Image (cartoon, rainbow, N blue to C red; front, side, top):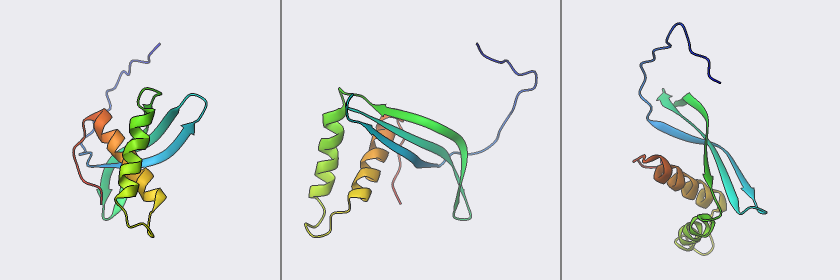
Amino acid sequence: MALTHDAIDNRNYAIDTTEITSFAVDLLRNEIHIGYDQGHMDQGTFVPDLSDLVVTVDSGQWSAFWNRASVRANAMPANNVNVAKVLKLTTLDRIKLDKSIAGTVS
């Protein structure tokens, strides 16, 4: 059941940034749940406009996600693999793919 508003909340903003807020791995179901916000940057500070969005990597996409992460890790120098960066970049790739977002990671 939905609530229909009497007064429409009109907003004028440009969403130009996506920020990961959570990352959960369900090992029993072979799923990954990625929480993220979308918003804009204001003088170097992220301001969320859309919060608590979720992308789920299901069991059918499980292997492809981890294979992509492995490719990223293997591209790093052997003595300088940054696991957090690998997961962040692979997760952002997944959000970009699911939501048809183009862009670069800074």
